[in-house]
Length: 86
Image 1 (tube, one colour):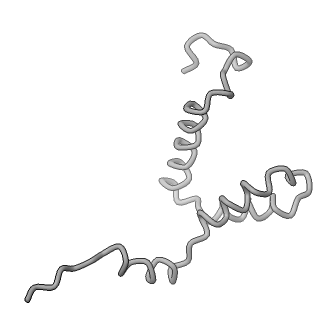
Image 2 (tube, rainbow, N blue to C red):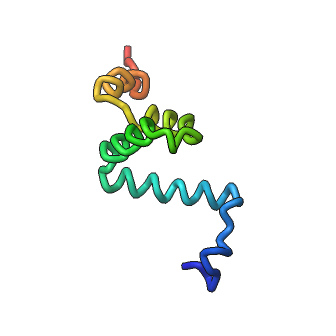
Image 3 (cartoon, one colour):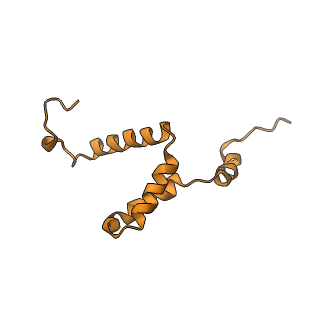
């Protein structure tokens, strides 16, 4: 709810609020299993010169969401350590 603020009064310059907005969007993408669609959309934007100013953020987002199963399998041993009992 906007607390009686019109959309023109919403503060998009507040870093904390922008971070919270991004967390909400990310949660929606992940909880809805939309990662593949999001990646396809980002790759489309990457080919569109109208989004050239956003290319660094687009590339960063692609790298963040484009994790293969092989990447996961290689990372698991580093994350899960089982203590050896002698």
